[in-house]
Length: 310
Ligand code: BDR
Ligand code: CA
Image 1 (spheres, rainbow, N blue to C red):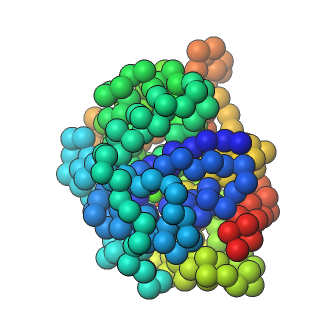
Image 2 (image 1 turned 120 degrees about the vertical axis):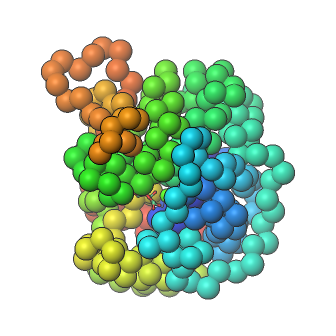
């Protein structure tokens, strides 16, 4: 089964990524690490612990990481995720503990203490923690199986005309991660805008009728309203769990080998994930972009995870 570390900023769709990873028989969720993004570090860390409490996930360590991007000021996404970062459901007071090590150290320890090539790093927030881990202990680069990122997009942006939120909130960190010598798979907006939580999806989740599925329904109701009001979407794109779905079953997500680099200096394009589709693809290339989602299979994985959690 696939071992993963999930670095996230919950976040409605991050919460669903946690639930998918926890509920899937194919995934061994070794750690959850948090990074400032959708809200401040304290809020998203509290949210990660609240989600774990709701779903009864008591054995997975949770560690807090960076409260600021590497260079620029912090920018949160209150207009999508609300004041708490996880508005909608009433959140329980977390009963699962917070680790006393920093997220960056937990990532390093976990990768170093497991056999080389067995752990995938999944990042569904800004790339600050992952970049710092790569710089602090470069030995992890060769040991990580794959870095799977929700972020960027080769066709469109959502936080500027050309940049996506997780990349534009810490472009320097993204630059480090995309340029290291490990396999990076970019699950960007091109893919995640196909993962819409349409009304029939919400109805299916409702009919599962467990505390976890009801929690997701409440998350999706808030998320749907925000995406309608502020982004003009009829149904919200559930970005982050697409990364986990790809690791559970690679046939859910089509990928292409394409060089990708991060724009740092463009006046209009800072934070853009520049993908070079020109022929031929260089032999040494280790960046991949996700292009096509199997919508039915994707939601089936979520329904399966929910019935496994019970
Ligand atoms: C990404 O930004 C965040 O608001 C979401 O959680 C997701 O990771 C989408 O651009
Ligand atoms: Ca996120």
